[in-house]
Image 1 (tube, rainbow over the protein chains, first blue to last red):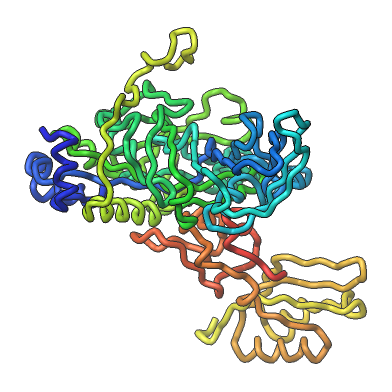
Image 2: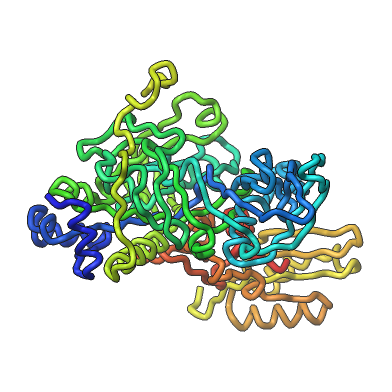
Length: 397
Length: 139
């Protein structure tokens, strides 16, 4: 048994043994779980994919004379101003006011909240426009200014739901091409899309959240961040396999982090044809090897992780009825082709595995260099549904 | 088929007076080329274009292109018309299963995206599939 304090003391001394969630698989095969658990202090994970339910809180400094911004736009993307005088929340999926959306289906969705967040992080100029009704204390009615992130007093990402533990794998059983948040799906199950880093993904390396909770110190968008809360739609009671790996989305995290530290290589605005705009987010979570069980969980491999293959055609996912056709594991999915019910189907990821590797590697470097310590959670993310009031629980929870 | 066969994707652009001519028939009949028409259109000014793949013996292909140019049809190679911006690409791979010719593919086990312009048939699927607009088309 190791404590957070013992591991952090080793990190400070530059003596912590840190490996990625890929490397630990081979190490455990060579020397066994027991010895690996003694030797290794931290296993780093990573994921980089489209994560809806992301957004940022921004504060603009007070203007002279003062304004209580009621309506706010950043590069023509509305931000929510109903918070205070010069605070707003910019959501990743908000559209540019001039975007034609799906008027000519499928829409291109070239610009929205996710892109503005990327532009700010990249240091690009963004045009702020605000309107107010005017008060005795905040008389100004309108304000326009070109700003960069350096002109913001505070800017932090606060995303209610990121880092899904596992996720649906999408196909299309109908006879028409469909344009979904899982990408372009051709008719008659011509392609399959998945969106997970599999064996590198944070919550698949600690499936029962034994080390992840409020205050866990993480890599977020190229800077440091924290786990703030269980994410919205956190559903830990989803069915699990014998290794504890959930067979559906299951766990999610609400995360927070300083935008001024972030790097636009690890957080990108995205246009999803026919669906809308969103944000690709890079997250890495360090898993402390507190005991042998923790080490065991980090040795999970792609072949151990199954995900539900769902029909996203009009008779499937959109109806709200069950749409699972079967289960596929990530070793099959990553190979580029799977065989399902006698048919060979091409597969493609929507999340970047090479970026996930880069994130796990960067986090490993930060910790090895003594620059990044572990955060001991003040409360763990719930591993069952007891945190949800009985009357709010869904039938399957 | 001889080993001297090549496949090229080209855009043929017609002036209004040539739009009615059976150009593809000429390519088949006189130059023994196999055409694969991917896209064709005539605009309101009656100018037209055909985007097609041509497979055949190298010398025949060369002579056919010369003939088309003599007739007054502009011939543009497609390879340099699709731009994949490696710096913009996040290496996610969302373009790879919808790409019919596997011009965009994932290298395994690195799981990084590569683009082979020679295989590209300019079907536009990648442009719809790419979430970060890393693929653009001058067309």
